[in-house]
Image (cartoon, rainbow, N blue to C red; front, side):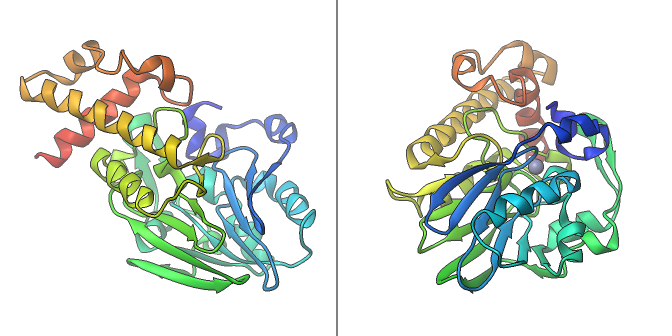
Length: 293
Ligand SMILES: [Zn+2]
């Protein structure tokens, strides 16, 4: 899927959704990662009801529900949105219509409430319909005592966007990072809606401080992950940030900076996902020049 389709489902043909199969990956007993189209979904199921992290696209809701029903007949009672992008919240309205309460950081709620413009891809995204909006918001953190776990949700400031939520399933030892983590690929940093490379590195550090060698990490995109892969991703981001900072320091323009190929030594490992290196380094430049203004 093109990166342009990450934000809004309008450009994706129905046949593409029809062809999608929902993969079920067990992160821990009672905690699943579902992979379909769009952001990876986290599921906690057990004696209470289903706690769900992100909803992908509305066209996939029935398939997602069928995947959940292979493990439990309990309803989806809570949907936590990791951020406002359409490939993570597109099914919100379908789940709220079935009785789920939608929870998100207050900045994600604010962005879903009005039209957004992501200049990096020249894309305008209309406000979400009323039924798709979060009904519970938080500023710093919120916790759920659910399915015999403690599900702690905390804000990652100015990371992928300005309203990212990280979800830590304490007893299961699973952490869902939303799009602050693109496993094995250069990540999209949505500088236009408040993201920054420094926030991305900071949240990787915050999550690593909670990890041990048995922790399972659910990325927004890419396969189920762990502490050592997250560490490598964090080092990649810090390396590119360092290279860009040096080039900005000697007065390079955005074009000169991209032409200098500061990621050349990293591309063999990290180019293979959604963003090509030139686009990624352009966003890093935008992030660092924006924050230094
Ligand atoms: Zn996103």
